[in-house]
Amino acid sequence: MQRIRDNIFIESNFFGVTVGAIVTPKGIICVDTPTSPGDTRKWRLQLAQLEAGPILYVINTDHNRDRIMGNQWCEAPVVAHSNTYERIAAYPDVYKAHSSQSGGEHELVNDLSGVRTVKPTLCLSGEMALIKDRVTCNLIHMGGAADGAIWVDVPSDKVLFVGDTLFAGLHPFLADADIDVWLNNLSELTQPRFNGYTIVAGRKSKRFEYLIDEIEYCVSYLTFLREQLSTIADGPMPGYAVSDVVRKLLQRYPVENNWMPLMSRRLTSGLEQMLVQRANL
Image (cartoon, rainbow, N blue to C red; front, side, top):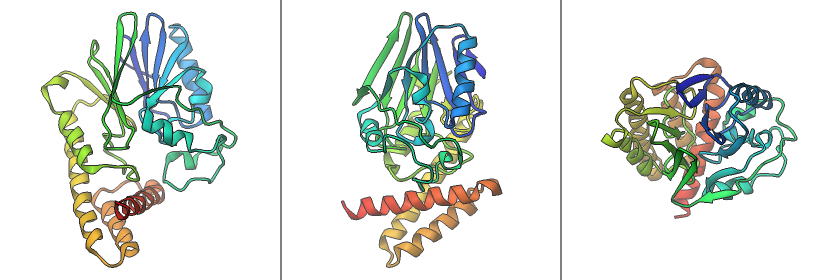
């Protein structure tokens, strides 16, 4: 666990997502939860060692299973966007292994069978402030990476959790993406209001000392993807075209060999769903 402010911690060594903990005088506000039950137990133990009181809330920055599977063990109200609620509510009440082929890290976790899906109990549609004593967490609907994606801003400490908005080092989930909104959100991170902030991404996250490099990588990726989607839309063979775009993305933005099958599945699933959504417009 890494302390990034006196009262804010992150853990980026769990398999799946980076999780955060914001310590208030009344207890702890968690940002997302670990993917595997074993990692969730470790996270709970780390939080207990802070002697900071109970978990008050869990904030889910989107609906991706990688970041909601630990909700069950946090035993606290879950806060999310209303669109995220709808997506989580559509999941089966109990997780079944091999029930998803979205390319999420949860598909590689062996002990998730039987985990309950815990739906949000408190939802926002635009913005919401969670205030506990002297600590304010502003939850801001940003969309882009997912229709219910939110950022968590702790202005007093200049820390911003952005979920899957930043994704350098891995390929992003695309099924619910709005690329134009996503690019606007990346531009927003460069604005003066976030000068001096520590930006925490939702996966493989460290303290970003070179934030502009991370942003430029994501902008390059999404701009290239948008160009490829325009080509697909004009082509006669969408199935072949999806495979071709996946190949181009994996070549242009390579990952370690052991991640290739999962990333290929993630991109294929996401692009296919994007095309279906476009066809229905």
